[in-house]
Each structure stands twice: as C-alpha cells, then as structure tokens.
Length: 462
Ligand code: PNW
Image (cartoon, rainbow, N blue to C red; front, side):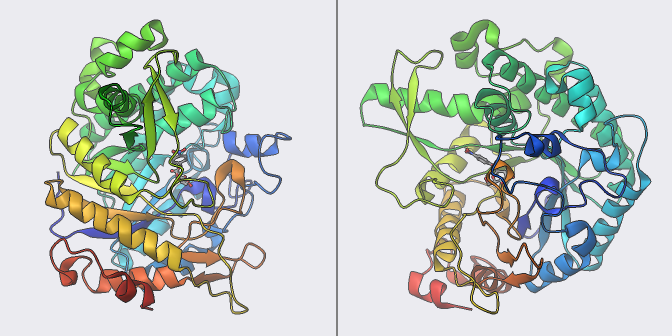
C-alpha cells in the first residue's frame, strides 16, 4: 500500500448526517430517509432533509478544515445521490458534487478518505430486492463502487468500503432501532453475510480498476471487553465477547471466515462463504480501520445463547450524552488486540469522539473542556498502543461538525465545530482550536515520545 510518511490527523463525517439536500439534486431516497418518516421510529426531529446543508456549504466546510489544520478528511458517498435507484441510471449532478468536493480538498492540501457505504442504502434496493438480505446486493455494490473508483480514484487514495457492518446489523436487524428497523437474528446474520460478500467484491473491483494505486479497507467498530471479575471464566467470556464483536467482521476480511468460536456457537444462523467469497475476502484489507467510543464488561453466563457471555456496562465511569462510559484504557487494549489478531497491518482510527451537552454563548462559541479531555486521554491511549508495537498511521476525530445522530436526532453533539441548526452557522469550539494546535505542534512529536500530556497544559490552551 501507499504508506504515508507522516501521521494523518483528520476528522470524519458521513453523507446522511451532514449533507442535507436529501430530496434535491436528483438524489433518490435512502432507507434512512424512509426510516425517519416512519412515525415513532426516531426522535421527532430526525430528518435528513437539511441537516448541516453541507452539499451547498462544502466550500465553507473545507475552509474550516483548513482552520483546524487537518491533514485528512473522511467522508462518505451517498449511494442514492449517485444512483437514485441503486443501479442503472447515474445522476451526474450527484457525481459532480463529489468530484468538486474532492477537488476542493486537494486544493486545500487535505487528503480525502472516502467511505462508500455509511448505512444509507438506496430505498429501491430495500423495497424491490429486500436490501442486504438479497444475495444480488454485493454485485450491485461493487458496480456502484466501480463508478466511484473511476470518477474519483485518480485523486482519492484511501478507500473504505463499508462503515461498521456491526452497527448495520445490530441496529438495523437485531435491535431494530436503525434502518431498516427489523428485529430478527437470522435475517441480521444474513444481511451481515451479504455485507461481507459486498466488501470482498468491491475490493476485488478496486484492485482490478485502473485507479488502484491507493489502499482499501473496511471500518470496524468495537468496544473492548474487560472481564467483569478476574475469574478465569470471565476472562474467557471477555475473549469470546471480543470475537463476537470485533472478530465477527474482522476475521472474514482478514482470514476469509467468521471466528470458529462463532460458527460453533451460532451454527446455521451464520451462512457459509463459498470458496470464491472466501478467496475474495482473505487479505481484502490493506490497513485496519477502527472506530472506537467505549468499552464494556463481559461476564460468563451459560444461560445466554450462543457465545455464553453477558454484556455489562461500567458503573464507575463518567458517561457521555449517548450514555457511553468513558474508558480510554480500553482503546489501548482494543488496538493491541486487533494488532495481535490481524498480524501487524498499518492501522487507522477512523472515528473516535464524544457527544456532550454543549452550551453555546451568545456568539455561538462552545467551551468544551470535557471534549478536550476525552480526546487528550484517547490520543494518549493510542500513543501507548503504538509504544506496544501498533503501527498506527492516522487518527480521525468524530466528528468535524455537529450533525444528525441517526435515530437520535440533533441533540447528540459530537462536533469539533458547532452547527446551529436554525441558522446553519458554524463556529469552531474550544476543542476544535485545541485540536488545531495539537496538529500544528506535530501531534505527539513535541510532547515527548509517549508522554501523556499534562492535563492543565492541554485543557487550558486555545
Ligand atoms: C458510529 N455502538 O456509530 C457511526 O459510524 C457514526 O455515524 C455515528 O454518528 C457515531 O458512531 C456516533 O454514534 C456507532 O453502539 C453507533 O457501539 C453505535 C455504536 C458504535 C458506533
């Protein structure tokens, strides 16, 4: 792969969460547009129609990225903006938008990192074909991906096929709290299976494309499971939890199959990969891409079907607005766990950040020392993983700016930049200024190798 010589500091977003223009510019509806319109499924304000209006304000947003000193920016393509019904007719206005965005980033000296699928499946594919449960979806995804490689691949060198298939299945098919809002384990494992097949085929299409000089991966998300007690049973339960979470989609893209422990535990619930699927999936990533927010506890429990562990939450930790416990040391452990299991691949943190109940002053300015502390502690945890041998090459904060937090609506603010959703005014928060400083000083470089930043020094800077 084209390994960078320098560490990339960036920020991340996704199409549905920031773009707006959901029903204009020739874009077709996605399953998220539909889900937000189904009464009672989401917070009342959840609606992708305008969000941050990024489609119309992308130039201002790229200028803000420059103010933050970002080396790189991770964003996603809306499949139905490019292919309004998921296949066939191409909406040139949609393609042009991404072309202009990539040009603006390159002109600003910011490295684009493109996610092809961040959950906004074209509605037509759900309605006509049954979405990811249909075995023909992977080929359609690879066809769409090829359109994007052809159009952007001369300038884009970092590609991510799918964002967090774990969330697609857990939210969309187990809990039913994300689109398409199904609650059925068998259907979920099937959808996850076709997501894996789609990844394999899209990677093969990339490697066969004329613009294949870059690197491609899939963004995993995982908690780290600490054992609930130091008993051997709980330690084994925590390892099973890791295989069930990070390994479910990590193993296929590296080894070509689900973890053997999952196959044994879930039997026929997990579909089998054909030899061809397995061949495409093995070594299908050039780098590991991981999104991290929180850690949990795992307790042995033989009464829980399948992997025989119970998930528990930390009770002694501060919590974020999304009710996630803040556990930076779990971040270090997760990076080390991934590195050991997946053999020393270069690694990128493609999301990490915190939702907080921000308070803006009259000028729209947000002083958010808790976000600075969260980032500082997680940067230190990542640095400590590097000292343990993890080849971390980049780090993207979630998120560039406040946006639509899926079914939760606009109340969960993750941004380095505040977005006023009435006026759409953007204002860099204290954390954004702190991050700009951090990058300008070379990240860890000026702070001593592996040194944890002194909290008073870091928190007080503007
Ligand atoms: C990620 N969990 O979602 C997504 O990639 C983003 O689009 C989202 O805005 C961000 O994290 C914050 O939520 C996740 O339950 C959703 O572990 C849920 C979990 C993890 C990530």
